[in-house]
Amino acid sequence: MADKKEIRYGIVGIGKQGTFYTNIFLHNMGILKGAKLTAVCDIAEDRRKYAEEHLKGVKVFDNYHDMFASGLIDVVMVETPHYFHPQIVIDALKAGLNVLCDKPAGVYTKQVKEMNEEAKKHPELLFGMMFNQRTNPLYVKAKELIDSGRLGKLTRIVWIITNWYRPKAYYDQGGWRGTWWGEGGGVLLNQCPHQLDLFTWLAGLPVSVTATSSTVGRDISVENDVTAYCKFENGATGVFITSTHDAPGTNRLEITGEGGKIVIEGGKLVFTENEEMEPAFSAHNKVFMGAPKTKKYTYRGWGHYTHFKKYPPQHAGIIKNYTDYLLGKTDKFIAPGEQGIIGLTFSNAIHLAGWTGKEVSIPFDEDLYLKELEKRKQEEQAKPVK
Ligand SMILES: NC(=O)c1ccc[n+]([C@@H]2O[C@H](COP(=O)([O-])OP(=O)(O)OC[C@H]3O[C@@H](n4cnc5c(N)ncnc54)[C@H](O)[C@@H]3O)[C@@H](O)[C@H]2O)c1
Image (cartoon, rainbow, N blue to C red):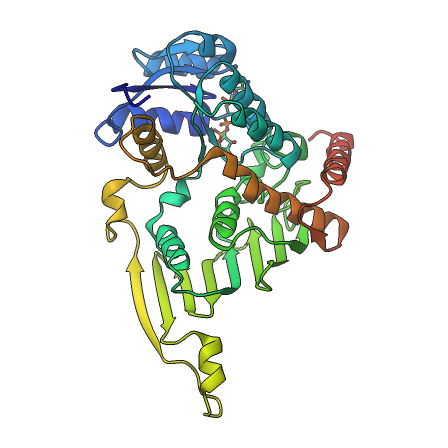
Protein backbone atom coordinates (compact mmCIF):
# COMPACT_ATOMS: atom_id res chain seq x y z
CA MET A 1 0.00 0.00 0.00
CA ALA A 2 3.06 2.20 -0.38
CA ASP A 3 1.13 4.27 -2.97
CA LYS A 4 -1.48 5.26 -0.35
CA LYS A 5 -1.23 8.39 1.80
CA GLU A 6 -3.68 7.35 4.48
CA ILE A 7 -4.58 4.04 6.12
CA ARG A 8 -8.21 3.63 7.22
CA TYR A 9 -8.88 1.62 10.36
CA GLY A 10 -12.03 -0.18 11.52
CA ILE A 11 -12.35 -1.56 15.06
CA VAL A 12 -14.30 -4.74 15.92
CA GLY A 13 -15.44 -4.42 19.54
CA ILE A 14 -15.54 -1.03 21.19
CA GLY A 15 -15.60 -2.12 24.80
CA LYS A 16 -12.87 -0.96 27.17
CA GLN A 17 -9.86 -1.53 24.94
CA GLY A 18 -11.52 -0.68 21.62
CA THR A 19 -12.71 2.61 23.09
CA PHE A 20 -9.19 3.32 24.34
CA TYR A 21 -7.98 3.00 20.71
CA THR A 22 -10.74 5.26 19.40
CA ASN A 23 -9.33 7.90 21.77
CA ILE A 24 -5.79 7.36 20.48
CA PHE A 25 -7.04 7.89 16.92
CA LEU A 26 -9.17 10.90 17.74
CA HIS A 27 -6.76 12.72 20.03
CA ASN A 28 -3.30 11.74 18.82
CA MET A 29 -3.39 12.38 15.12
CA GLY A 30 -0.10 14.20 15.39
CA ILE A 31 1.54 10.96 16.44
CA LEU A 32 -0.51 8.75 14.13
CA LYS A 33 0.05 10.70 10.94
CA GLY A 34 -1.39 8.73 8.03
CA ALA A 35 -3.78 6.70 10.20
CA LYS A 36 -7.51 7.40 10.35
CA LEU A 37 -10.39 5.72 12.17
CA THR A 38 -13.26 5.36 9.69
CA ALA A 39 -15.50 2.62 11.13
CA VAL A 40 -16.29 0.65 14.27
CA CYS A 41 -18.63 -2.21 15.06
CA ASP A 42 -20.04 -3.86 18.15
CA ILE A 43 -22.79 -6.37 18.80
CA ALA A 44 -23.80 -4.48 21.95
CA GLU A 45 -26.37 -1.75 21.40
CA ASP A 46 -25.08 0.47 24.23
CA ARG A 47 -21.58 0.49 22.72
CA ARG A 48 -22.96 1.44 19.30
CA LYS A 49 -24.97 4.22 20.90
CA TYR A 50 -21.80 5.44 22.61
CA ALA A 51 -19.98 5.36 19.26
CA GLU A 52 -22.71 7.27 17.45
CA GLU A 53 -22.60 9.98 20.11
CA HIS A 54 -18.84 10.27 20.49
CA LEU A 55 -17.23 9.25 17.20
CA LYS A 56 -18.31 11.87 14.72
CA GLY A 57 -17.67 10.95 11.11
CA VAL A 58 -17.00 7.31 12.02
CA LYS A 59 -19.45 4.80 10.55
CA VAL A 60 -20.97 2.43 13.14
CA PHE A 61 -21.90 -1.18 12.26
CA ASP A 62 -23.76 -3.82 14.27
CA ASN A 63 -21.76 -6.71 12.79
CA TYR A 64 -18.26 -7.04 11.45
CA HIS A 65 -19.18 -8.73 8.17
CA ASP A 66 -20.92 -5.56 6.98
CA MET A 67 -18.00 -3.42 8.14
CA PHE A 68 -15.55 -5.65 6.24
CA ALA A 69 -17.65 -5.41 3.05
CA SER A 70 -18.20 -1.63 3.34
CA GLY A 71 -15.09 -0.55 1.42
CA LEU A 72 -14.48 1.98 4.22
CA ILE A 73 -11.46 0.33 5.84
CA ASP A 74 -8.02 -1.00 5.00
CA VAL A 75 -7.19 -2.45 8.42
CA VAL A 76 -9.26 -4.35 10.99
CA MET A 77 -8.38 -4.02 14.67
CA VAL A 78 -9.73 -6.97 16.67
CA GLU A 79 -10.84 -5.94 20.19
CA THR A 80 -13.32 -8.61 21.27
CA PRO A 81 -12.87 -11.21 24.03
CA HIS A 82 -9.99 -13.58 23.19
CA TYR A 83 -11.88 -16.69 21.99
CA PHE A 84 -13.16 -14.75 18.95
CA HIS A 85 -9.80 -13.33 17.84
CA PRO A 86 -8.73 -16.11 15.43
CA GLN A 87 -12.09 -16.38 13.64
CA ILE A 88 -12.39 -12.61 13.17
CA VAL A 89 -8.80 -12.43 11.88
CA ILE A 90 -9.52 -15.26 9.44
CA ASP A 91 -12.70 -13.55 8.21
CA ALA A 92 -10.89 -10.23 7.79
CA LEU A 93 -8.08 -11.82 5.77
CA LYS A 94 -10.62 -13.65 3.61
CA ALA A 95 -12.31 -10.28 2.99
CA GLY A 96 -8.97 -8.94 1.71
CA LEU A 97 -8.25 -6.73 4.73
CA ASN A 98 -5.10 -6.17 6.75
CA VAL A 99 -5.43 -7.09 10.44
CA LEU A 100 -4.00 -5.86 13.71
CA CYS A 101 -5.19 -8.27 16.41
CA ASP A 102 -5.02 -7.57 20.12
CA LYS A 103 -3.39 -9.97 22.53
CA PRO A 104 -3.69 -12.85 23.14
CA ALA A 105 -3.62 -14.30 19.61
CA GLY A 106 -6.33 -16.68 20.81
CA VAL A 107 -6.99 -19.02 23.69
CA TYR A 108 -5.44 -22.23 22.38
CA THR A 109 -2.74 -22.92 19.85
CA LYS A 110 -4.79 -25.26 17.65
CA GLN A 111 -7.15 -22.38 16.81
CA VAL A 112 -4.26 -19.92 16.34
CA LYS A 113 -2.49 -22.32 13.95
CA GLU A 114 -5.54 -22.14 11.67
CA MET A 115 -5.33 -18.35 11.81
CA ASN A 116 -1.64 -18.43 10.87
CA GLU A 117 -2.38 -20.85 8.02
CA GLU A 118 -4.93 -18.37 6.64
CA ALA A 119 -2.42 -15.52 7.00
CA LYS A 120 0.11 -17.52 4.96
CA LYS A 121 -2.39 -17.59 2.08
CA HIS A 122 -2.44 -13.75 2.01
CA PRO A 123 1.16 -12.53 1.83
CA GLU A 124 -0.14 -9.30 0.27
CA LEU A 125 -1.93 -8.43 3.54
CA LEU A 126 -0.27 -7.23 6.72
CA PHE A 127 -1.02 -9.26 9.84
CA GLY A 128 0.11 -7.74 13.13
CA MET A 129 -0.30 -8.37 16.84
CA MET A 130 -0.84 -5.65 19.44
CA PHE A 131 2.29 -6.47 21.43
CA ASN A 132 2.63 -2.91 22.72
CA GLN A 133 5.29 -3.85 25.29
CA ARG A 134 7.63 -4.47 22.35
CA THR A 135 7.84 -0.68 22.02
CA ASN A 136 8.94 -0.33 25.66
CA PRO A 137 12.52 1.00 25.36
CA LEU A 138 13.73 -1.18 28.23
CA TYR A 139 12.70 -4.43 26.55
CA VAL A 140 13.90 -3.10 23.19
CA LYS A 141 17.29 -2.44 24.82
CA ALA A 142 17.36 -5.94 26.35
CA LYS A 143 16.63 -7.42 22.92
CA GLU A 144 19.42 -5.36 21.36
CA LEU A 145 21.92 -6.46 24.02
CA ILE A 146 21.00 -10.12 23.54
CA ASP A 147 20.99 -9.96 19.72
CA SER A 148 24.33 -8.09 19.67
CA GLY A 149 25.95 -11.03 21.49
CA ARG A 150 27.11 -8.89 24.43
CA LEU A 151 25.13 -10.98 26.92
CA GLY A 152 26.64 -14.11 25.38
CA LYS A 153 24.94 -17.48 25.58
CA LEU A 154 21.86 -17.15 27.81
CA THR A 155 21.94 -19.25 30.98
CA ARG A 156 18.87 -18.10 32.90
CA ILE A 157 15.78 -15.93 32.66
CA VAL A 158 13.59 -15.17 35.67
CA TRP A 159 10.51 -12.97 35.54
CA ILE A 160 8.52 -12.19 38.68
CA ILE A 161 5.44 -10.33 37.52
CA THR A 162 3.07 -10.25 40.45
CA ASN A 163 1.99 -6.62 40.35
CA TRP A 164 -1.34 -7.37 38.66
CA TYR A 165 -3.30 -7.00 41.88
CA ARG A 166 -7.02 -7.65 41.28
CA PRO A 167 -9.29 -7.52 44.33
CA LYS A 168 -12.51 -9.47 44.76
CA ALA A 169 -14.47 -6.52 43.27
CA TYR A 170 -12.69 -7.00 39.94
CA TYR A 171 -13.90 -10.58 39.59
CA ASP A 172 -17.33 -9.71 41.03
CA GLN A 173 -17.99 -7.63 37.89
CA GLY A 174 -18.85 -10.95 36.25
CA GLY A 175 -18.98 -11.27 32.46
CA TRP A 176 -16.34 -13.16 30.48
CA ARG A 177 -13.33 -12.15 32.60
CA GLY A 178 -11.83 -14.68 34.99
CA THR A 179 -13.72 -17.66 33.53
CA TRP A 180 -12.79 -20.74 31.51
CA TRP A 181 -15.79 -20.29 29.22
CA GLY A 182 -15.16 -16.58 28.65
CA GLU A 183 -11.41 -16.27 28.38
CA GLY A 184 -9.94 -19.72 28.73
CA GLY A 185 -7.76 -18.92 31.71
CA GLY A 186 -6.89 -16.40 34.37
CA VAL A 187 -3.72 -14.40 34.85
CA LEU A 188 -1.95 -16.28 32.01
CA LEU A 189 -4.58 -15.35 29.42
CA ASN A 190 -5.68 -11.94 30.60
CA GLN A 191 -2.84 -10.09 32.30
CA CYS A 192 0.32 -11.89 31.15
CA PRO A 193 0.26 -12.30 27.35
CA HIS A 194 2.68 -9.36 26.96
CA GLN A 195 5.20 -10.83 29.41
CA LEU A 196 4.84 -14.31 27.92
CA ASP A 197 5.50 -12.75 24.51
CA LEU A 198 8.54 -10.85 25.79
CA PHE A 199 9.90 -13.86 27.72
CA THR A 200 9.92 -15.90 24.51
CA TRP A 201 10.91 -12.92 22.30
CA LEU A 202 14.02 -12.41 24.43
CA ALA A 203 14.97 -15.98 25.37
CA GLY A 204 13.20 -18.14 22.76
CA LEU A 205 10.56 -20.80 23.28
CA PRO A 206 11.43 -23.31 26.04
CA VAL A 207 11.52 -27.02 25.25
CA SER A 208 9.72 -28.08 28.43
CA VAL A 209 7.77 -26.67 31.35
CA THR A 210 6.83 -27.75 34.87
CA ALA A 211 4.35 -25.58 36.75
CA THR A 212 1.96 -25.05 39.58
CA SER A 213 -1.14 -23.00 38.86
CA SER A 214 -3.75 -22.33 41.49
CA THR A 215 -6.51 -20.03 42.68
CA VAL A 216 -5.69 -18.12 45.82
CA GLY A 217 -8.08 -16.02 47.89
CA ARG A 218 -10.71 -15.38 45.19
CA ASP A 219 -13.96 -17.16 44.35
CA ILE A 220 -13.05 -17.84 40.71
CA SER A 221 -12.43 -21.03 38.79
CA VAL A 222 -9.40 -19.86 36.77
CA GLU A 223 -5.83 -19.52 38.03
CA ASN A 224 -4.55 -16.34 39.68
CA ASP A 225 -1.22 -17.74 40.88
CA VAL A 226 1.41 -19.43 38.71
CA THR A 227 5.00 -20.56 39.13
CA ALA A 228 6.53 -22.13 36.03
CA TYR A 229 9.99 -23.60 35.65
CA CYS A 230 11.22 -24.16 32.11
CA LYS A 231 14.18 -25.53 30.21
CA PHE A 232 15.65 -24.25 26.94
CA GLU A 233 17.35 -26.21 24.19
CA ASN A 234 20.80 -24.81 25.05
CA GLY A 235 20.50 -25.99 28.67
CA ALA A 236 19.44 -22.58 30.03
CA THR A 237 16.61 -22.51 32.56
CA GLY A 238 13.82 -20.05 33.25
CA VAL A 239 11.27 -19.23 35.91
CA PHE A 240 8.04 -17.31 35.34
CA ILE A 241 6.09 -16.28 38.43
CA THR A 242 2.85 -14.37 38.26
CA SER A 243 -0.18 -13.61 40.38
CA THR A 244 -3.10 -11.21 40.74
CA HIS A 245 -3.37 -11.43 44.53
CA ASP A 246 0.06 -10.33 45.85
CA ALA A 247 -0.08 -6.93 47.48
CA PRO A 248 2.34 -5.34 47.02
CA GLY A 249 3.52 -7.12 43.90
CA THR A 250 6.80 -7.15 41.97
CA ASN A 251 7.81 -6.69 38.35
CA ARG A 252 11.41 -7.82 37.96
CA LEU A 253 13.00 -9.41 34.91
CA GLU A 254 16.50 -10.83 35.24
CA ILE A 255 18.35 -12.38 32.30
CA THR A 256 21.77 -13.90 32.82
CA GLY A 257 24.21 -14.90 30.12
CA GLU A 258 27.87 -15.81 29.96
CA GLY A 259 28.57 -12.13 29.21
CA GLY A 260 26.77 -10.66 32.24
CA LYS A 261 23.33 -9.89 33.57
CA ILE A 262 20.38 -7.67 32.65
CA VAL A 263 17.92 -6.60 35.34
CA ILE A 264 14.79 -4.62 34.47
CA GLU A 265 12.92 -3.27 37.45
CA GLY A 266 11.51 0.04 38.64
CA GLY A 267 11.58 1.74 35.21
CA LYS A 268 15.24 1.06 34.49
CA LEU A 269 17.47 -1.55 32.93
CA VAL A 270 20.83 -2.28 34.52
CA PHE A 271 23.31 -4.22 32.42
CA THR A 272 26.24 -5.62 34.37
CA GLU A 273 28.68 -6.69 31.68
CA ASN A 274 31.50 -9.15 32.32
CA GLU A 275 34.78 -7.92 30.87
CA GLU A 276 35.29 -11.47 29.70
CA MET A 277 32.77 -14.24 29.01
CA GLU A 278 32.38 -16.37 32.13
CA PRO A 279 33.60 -19.72 30.65
CA ALA A 280 36.77 -18.03 29.26
CA PHE A 281 37.41 -16.35 32.62
CA SER A 282 36.91 -19.57 34.57
CA ALA A 283 39.28 -21.42 32.23
CA HIS A 284 42.29 -19.20 33.00
CA ASN A 285 41.48 -17.78 36.47
CA LYS A 286 43.71 -19.14 39.25
CA VAL A 287 42.25 -17.09 42.11
CA PHE A 288 40.18 -19.01 44.67
CA MET A 289 36.71 -17.36 44.55
CA GLY A 290 37.80 -15.08 41.69
CA ALA A 291 35.07 -13.58 39.48
CA PRO A 292 35.05 -11.71 36.15
CA LYS A 293 35.49 -7.94 36.38
CA THR A 294 32.34 -6.08 35.42
CA LYS A 295 31.10 -2.73 34.09
CA LYS A 296 27.66 -1.40 34.86
CA TYR A 297 25.38 0.44 32.39
CA THR A 298 22.01 1.91 33.31
CA TYR A 299 19.24 2.72 30.82
CA ARG A 300 16.08 4.51 31.80
CA GLY A 301 12.59 4.19 30.34
CA TRP A 302 10.44 6.41 28.17
CA GLY A 303 11.96 9.68 27.09
CA HIS A 304 15.53 8.69 27.89
CA TYR A 305 16.08 6.56 24.89
CA THR A 306 16.24 7.50 21.21
CA HIS A 307 13.82 4.74 20.20
CA PHE A 308 11.06 6.77 21.89
CA LYS A 309 11.55 9.56 19.36
CA LYS A 310 10.80 7.19 16.51
CA TYR A 311 7.90 5.28 18.01
CA PRO A 312 5.63 6.67 20.73
CA PRO A 313 4.98 4.49 23.72
CA GLN A 314 2.95 1.36 23.81
CA HIS A 315 -0.25 0.98 21.76
CA ALA A 316 0.15 4.18 19.74
CA GLY A 317 3.68 2.99 18.93
CA ILE A 318 2.39 -0.28 17.49
CA ILE A 319 -0.34 1.49 15.46
CA LYS A 320 2.20 3.99 14.17
CA ASN A 321 4.67 1.27 13.20
CA TYR A 322 1.87 -0.72 11.53
CA THR A 323 0.76 2.36 9.57
CA ASP A 324 4.31 3.36 8.63
CA TYR A 325 5.03 -0.17 7.43
CA LEU A 326 1.91 -0.20 5.25
CA LEU A 327 2.80 3.23 3.86
CA GLY A 328 6.32 2.05 3.04
CA LYS A 329 7.89 4.50 5.52
CA THR A 330 9.73 1.80 7.46
CA ASP A 331 10.94 -1.69 6.69
CA LYS A 332 10.92 -2.69 10.36
CA PHE A 333 7.72 -4.43 11.47
CA ILE A 334 7.70 -4.67 15.26
CA ALA A 335 5.05 -7.29 15.95
CA PRO A 336 4.17 -9.75 13.15
CA GLY A 337 0.86 -11.52 13.80
CA GLU A 338 2.25 -15.01 13.19
CA GLN A 339 4.46 -14.55 16.28
CA GLY A 340 1.40 -14.42 18.56
CA ILE A 341 1.45 -18.21 18.74
CA ILE A 342 4.87 -18.32 20.42
CA GLY A 343 3.90 -16.76 23.75
CA LEU A 344 0.56 -18.59 23.61
CA THR A 345 2.38 -21.92 23.18
CA PHE A 346 4.34 -21.18 26.36
CA SER A 347 1.09 -20.12 28.09
CA ASN A 348 -0.81 -23.28 27.07
CA ALA A 349 2.15 -25.46 28.08
CA ILE A 350 2.21 -23.82 31.53
CA HIS A 351 -1.52 -24.45 31.93
CA LEU A 352 -1.16 -28.08 30.89
CA ALA A 353 1.81 -28.60 33.22
CA GLY A 354 -0.14 -27.08 36.12
CA TRP A 355 -3.25 -29.13 35.37
CA THR A 356 -1.46 -32.47 34.96
CA GLY A 357 1.29 -31.96 37.53
CA LYS A 358 3.76 -33.29 34.93
CA GLU A 359 6.65 -31.86 32.95
CA VAL A 360 5.25 -30.88 29.55
CA SER A 361 7.42 -31.02 26.43
CA ILE A 362 6.95 -28.38 23.75
CA PRO A 363 5.36 -28.98 21.26
CA PHE A 364 2.73 -30.38 23.62
CA ASP A 365 -0.33 -32.55 23.05
CA GLU A 366 -2.90 -30.01 21.80
CA ASP A 367 -5.79 -32.48 22.00
CA LEU A 368 -5.02 -33.21 25.63
CA TYR A 369 -4.88 -29.45 26.29
CA LEU A 370 -8.33 -28.98 24.73
CA LYS A 371 -9.76 -31.95 26.64
CA GLU A 372 -8.51 -30.48 29.93
CA LEU A 373 -9.80 -27.00 29.05
CA GLU A 374 -13.21 -28.44 28.12
CA LYS A 375 -13.34 -30.33 31.43
CA ARG A 376 -12.83 -27.06 33.30
CA LYS A 377 -15.52 -25.30 31.28
CA GLN A 378 -17.98 -28.09 32.13
CA GLU A 379 -17.11 -27.96 35.84
CA GLU A 380 -17.56 -24.19 35.81
CA GLN A 381 -20.95 -24.50 34.13
CA ALA A 382 -22.07 -27.04 36.71
CA LYS A 383 -21.43 -24.56 39.55
CA PRO A 384 -24.45 -22.67 40.91
CA VAL A 385 -24.85 -19.21 39.38
CA LYS A 386 -24.15 -16.43 41.91
N1 LIG B 1 -3.04 -4.66 24.46
C1 LIG B 1 -3.47 -4.38 25.66
O1 LIG B 1 -2.75 -3.75 26.44
C2 LIG B 1 -4.84 -4.79 26.09
C3 LIG B 1 -5.38 -4.26 27.26
C4 LIG B 1 -6.69 -4.64 27.62
C5 LIG B 1 -7.40 -5.55 26.85
N2 LIG B 1 -6.81 -6.06 25.72
C6 LIG B 1 -7.54 -7.07 24.91
O2 LIG B 1 -8.66 -6.47 24.29
C7 LIG B 1 -9.69 -7.45 24.13
C8 LIG B 1 -11.00 -6.83 24.59
O3 LIG B 1 -10.91 -6.52 25.96
P1 LIG B 1 -11.88 -5.44 26.63
O4 LIG B 1 -11.37 -5.23 28.00
O5 LIG B 1 -12.05 -4.28 25.74
O6 LIG B 1 -13.27 -6.26 26.69
P2 LIG B 1 -14.75 -5.64 26.74
O7 LIG B 1 -15.63 -6.75 27.19
O8 LIG B 1 -14.75 -4.36 27.49
O9 LIG B 1 -15.05 -5.31 25.19
C9 LIG B 1 -15.27 -6.27 24.20
C10 LIG B 1 -16.29 -5.74 23.23
O10 LIG B 1 -16.37 -6.63 22.11
C11 LIG B 1 -17.73 -6.68 21.73
N3 LIG B 1 -17.92 -7.88 20.91
C12 LIG B 1 -17.92 -9.17 21.30
N4 LIG B 1 -18.10 -9.97 20.24
C13 LIG B 1 -18.21 -9.19 19.16
C14 LIG B 1 -18.40 -9.43 17.79
N5 LIG B 1 -18.52 -10.66 17.29
N6 LIG B 1 -18.47 -8.38 16.94
C15 LIG B 1 -18.37 -7.11 17.40
N7 LIG B 1 -18.18 -6.83 18.71
C16 LIG B 1 -18.10 -7.85 19.57
C17 LIG B 1 -18.50 -6.67 23.04
O11 LIG B 1 -19.85 -6.30 22.86
C18 LIG B 1 -17.71 -5.65 23.83
O12 LIG B 1 -18.21 -4.33 23.68
C19 LIG B 1 -9.27 -8.67 24.94
O13 LIG B 1 -8.86 -9.72 24.09
C20 LIG B 1 -8.11 -8.19 25.78
O14 LIG B 1 -7.12 -9.17 26.01
C21 LIG B 1 -5.57 -5.69 25.33
